[in-house]
Image 1 (cartoon, rainbow, N blue to C red):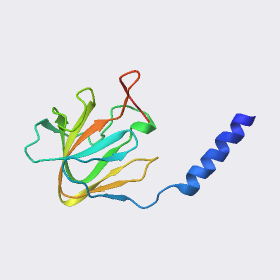
Image 2: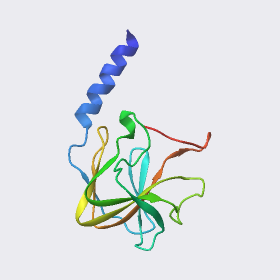
Image 3: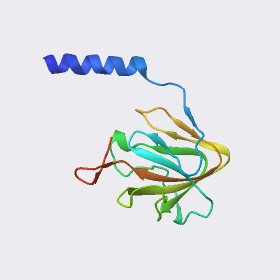
Image 4: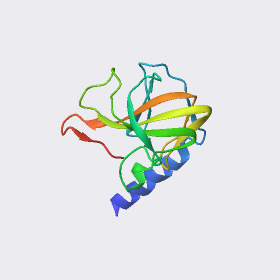
Length: 136
């Protein structure tokens, strides 16, 4: 019974403090942004990547926490190279190219992130203790 009350209280607080307005991504190469368990790294146009994919989901998985979806003027590519500023054990995600109209990364539980035109490499948060990818 006490656990149910705690969950209800936390859910209420989360709804009351939720961010309705998308965050605008204004980072330079060498820095990063974040949405839950994914990191968004601006990279140069020369950043190596794999072939184009039609999948716009940025985190692998079927659960609600994996629903980081990029929408808008965007092309998605298989990621092949980590940004030089991250640990070589970091989990690699796709690379995205955002066109002049911009794009938005949406998620049902996090503030949406607006991206300006450019190139972005996605990486995933990792648990330093287990060296496993964190999934939200």
